[in-house]
Length: 205
Length: 118
Image (cartoon, rainbow over all chains, first blue to last red; front, side):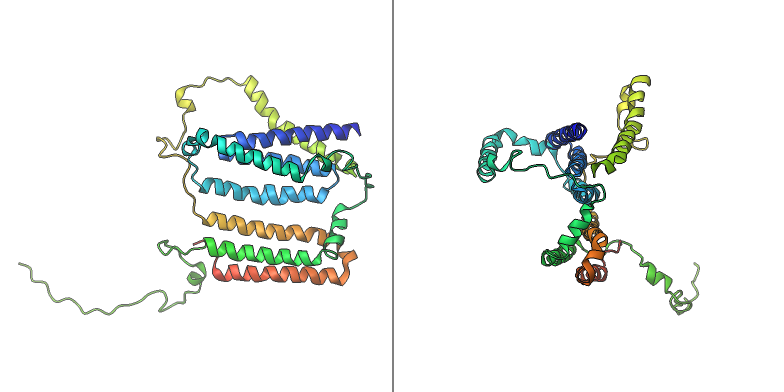
C-alpha cells in the first residue's frame, strides 16, 4: 500500500505543477504542452483508482485529439501577447470579484461535506483478472442504451456543424482534380485542334 | 489489479531516463560557448521575415475536429468489443444503429467535399 500512495503523491504533484504552469506560461504553445503533461499524469491517477479504461481514453482522446485541436486554435488565434497583457491591472479588481463570487458559489454547492475520506471510502481492490472495460461495456450498452444513441446524434450534429461553419471553397486555388485527370481519354479530351484562317502575306517595307 | 501495470511504470521510468539522460549529460559535459550569432533565430541564412504568430487556414481546424469525432466513435467501440459476448444481439443492434447514425455524417462530409484538400 505504501508504494501506491507514493506513486499517487508523485503523479498528483506533477499534475498540480503542470496545471499551475498552464495558467502562468506566457507562451500559449508551452501552456498547451503543459496541459498535455497534466492530462497524462491525471491518466495515471485514474489508473491508480483502477479506472483503467477512463485513463486510456483520456490519453487517446484528450492528448491525442483535443490537444491537436488546441494547438491549431492557439496558432490560428494570432495571439498578440502585448495586447492581452495591456488591460491586466485595469481589469484586476473586477476579475478578482468574479473569481471570488464563483469560488463562493462552488463552495456553497459542493461544500466540505462532500469531500473527505468518509465520503469516498476506498473500494476493495479488484482481482487481477477483473476487466474494468468489460464492466463498463455491459452497463453502457444495456442500461444506458438511450444516452449512448443520443451521443451518436450529438456527434452527427458536431460533424454537420463543423463542416457548415468552416468549409469554404476557394476558387482562386489552382487545384487539379486527380480523378478527372485520370479519366481523360485519348482524342478530344487531350488536344483540341483549333482551325484558324491563315494570315495573309505580310508586306515587308 | 494494479500489479498488472507495474511493467508499464517501469517502461515509463526507463523512457524518461533514456529521454532526459542524454540531455542532462549534454548539459553538464558538453562545451557551451554561446555568442550573439549562435543564439539568433536561423531561417535558411537570411533574417527572419516576421513573427511566427500568424493566422492559419481554418481548414486545419476542420480536419482536427473531424478527427476528434471519429476518435470518440472508436473510444465507444472498445468497451463494446470487449463486452460483446455478454451483450448478445441487443448490443450488436445498438452498435449498428450508433455506427449507422455516424455513417450518415460520414456520407455528408464526403459528399460536401470536406475530406478533399484543394
